[in-house]
Length: 262
Ligand code: APR
Ligand code: ZN
Image (cartoon, rainbow, N blue to C red; front, side):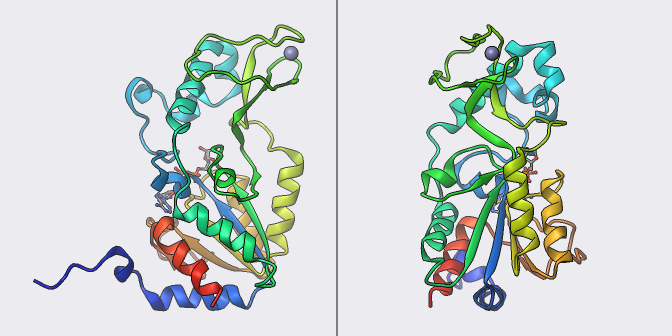
């Protein structure tokens, strides 16, 4: 019985070193992360089936203004449930690898811009700076006057919270379907993608625009595109992607970042 290959052994070192070579030769790198980078931290990805009480809803049904206006208590309690599910989760080796890379970027003569679609704070918890395109789960603001709501809210509280300024319902500062992305964040993300020599898409199904268009923008401007996703998007015929690393981010990113520094 041959010794079972560890997951790392199963990863193609040729494929990883081809990505390392491309990245080493680059100056400007844009990284876009999605829910998949938090999967190994135990946070279900966005298109994973919802569990328990929320099984009968799809995220799309709840994460929109109409749903909140129709039943604010339902949408609020869903976000409180999601916060409860996320609050004890920790960054995984993929998050820490990106933080290490950010710390080494100057020595590597890299300009590294990390953009995320995620609303969890695991990039920040691991020490990274990230541009959040879809908002942040732990921030709230008033749905009527827009004032930020800075007070901590226990995730157990499912009752609606009222704005101290106008009495409106407090809502999570998440970009809901149909809403505009935060202007500054979107401008910065587009600039980083358009000026990148290498664009690395990590843990995203690349289904939701406009974020999913960043890789196309980078490609159109001449960047090499690398994808890290155990379920390659768009199948093998995906012309957008130059190097496909079909591995879990928590396994391949530490190896890749480690080789950059060599
Ligand atoms: N490492 C890398 N990728 C992974 C891993 C992993 N360990 N586990 C799963 N994935 C991949 C899945 O194969 C999938 O392609 O992560 C991707 C997650 O895709 P989605 O669940 O669609 O999440 P995401 O792409 O981030 O969704 C984008 O859609 O619903 C909106 O606003 C929401 O930000 C979200 C956006
Ligand atoms: Zn208000």
